[in-house]
Amino acid sequence: MKRVVVGLSGGVDSSVAAYLLQQQGYEVIGLFMKNWHDDSVTISNECPWLEDSNDAMLVAEKLGIPFQVVDLSEEYKERIVNYMFKEYERGRTPNPDVLCNREIKFDVFMKIALDLGADYVATGHYCRRGVLQDQNHQNIYQLKAGIDTNKDQSYFLCQLSQEQLSKALFPIGELTKPEVREIAKELDLVTAEKKDSQGLCFIGKVRLPEFLQQKLQPREGVIVQVAKDYEDYQKEIPQFSNKLEELAFYSQKHEYTLASGKVVAKHQGAHYFTKGQRKGLAVGGTKEPLFVIETDVKENVIYTGEGKNHPGLYRKVLFVSNQELHWIRKDLSLTIGDIMEVQARIRYRQPLEKATLYQTEKGMYVEFENSQSAIQEGQFVAWHLDDELLGSGVIA
Image (cartoon, rainbow, N blue to C red):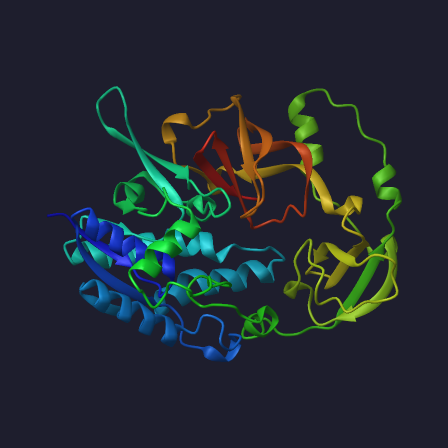
């Protein structure tokens, strides 16, 4: 009998995942990951770990499976939290959930599971794993979107490797969320009606400024409002001698100085803000809300634009350096000069958009058919062919 360790999070999805594996004849063990000790920065009653571990234990009891709590808070702090601080300090916006899956659930946690004699690790992600065979009859693992398009979570797993996927199971990937809840209700599981957790992976909702202030000190600076018809957007577009020159030009982020607009307010640290952000600016008196269109952490200035259609929010080309390029399907990876038409997204829950990949000597350009709002350095872009996620990379 094959043994599976399920990451029981205390939510309905992983609870039903454990049950389905039981039904499929696996020997199932439930493990809860404790990744955080500091409750001072979490918003109360939002995903408190104690309640979650309790619920996970009750589910394990109900299903009659062994259960234990593993404390991964040191590894989480080292690999996820410290990385977050460094990225925000640089004026970039990391995605801790993508990293948590690559570094914690399918690395540290997976090693613990394999030490327990597990053949697989399972989670409650809405995605599917496919298996193909190459010419040498070796398995090639696919990461596919979940059947429930409204809940598809393949984006969060966009950094997994072939080795990690070979040991991963996603039992609820063929189900919709209502179907999962229905199963939990029929089993009378304590998690059946529990609302989905939000916020940082296994921490919960945090007050980001307070969270970041643990390491990044407040620093007063100014908020500049940039006019929609700012001359920067009227600048002459150069004549391009080739496609790569054009891609390089359009992948550059918008550059601003204090002379680009008028000072409208003050803030407590540019590193607490991210492109596309609207809340927390506390600036009134405009017809439409102000959005962050750029941050300059060196000069400690936040540049904003009025309205969500402000041209400063939009770009259609982004760049991923070779060091940050990751192909799940290495057999489909591009070589220099190669081009591939795909569908891509730059954030979870964003509809997939038509895009073209261009592999160059130093990295890969992703050119979207339509301009994208708030392309943020540090976030992950992921690309698909049909329902399969092929690869991803950190936006430079």
